[in-house]
Image (tube, rainbow, N blue to C red):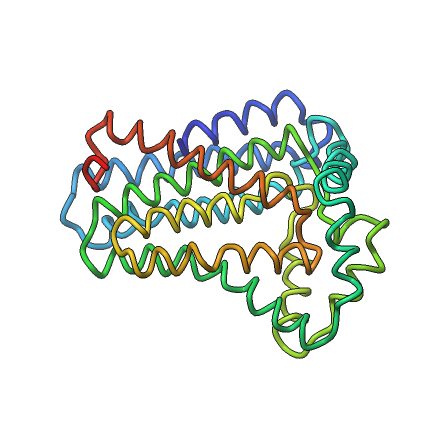
Length: 284
């Protein structure tokens, strides 16, 4: 999945490079990443009991997801040259909810509520390390490989959807500037999140939400190996979703589409893993 994504990304870059500044450098980055992944897998086959190599083999998907996210920033609009899906997403929100949720929440915003929502939203960032480290330290290697395979598939396939449906989040749409500003105040967590979104957020990577696609995959995976932890993560997702919309990081339909996409990828990925004999949880 990783190598397929890097190959397809490189192909898109060659075709639509006229909208990407310094595109040869980005093409080189993709090829280098593919080479590193291939080398890690080769070394793991040749030296299966070397601790450092095994750790790289297990956890390289996390680094790959971060790398691919960074590479979206200059390239996400390369096919169309704009963020054409933004207006469509806004209309879908109005159709489903009668009003854009970020505007609705503006009436209830306050510094303490903004801080609480910032705290809830931050819970998402615990999902990948909690699930992967739990599996690693409980020596469930097959479950760790399967979980990371599923979650990297959800992220990378979601990134490809960004190229087809480039959409701005509410915090980057002029129409919602006043509403988002009302939810930006806070004490510690919310100002930090606001800074991170301004510096590390990708313009045009809102629909579907890759965060929630990955979160539902990790939560379902966790249910399989530790029900208490897994159901705790499942229970946290609605609160994280509410916070993401309240703070203007996502439209309501971004979250819904992300959860549906993550659920589909889990179902699809599980079938493939079973066919390959790599599904670690037996037949449910």
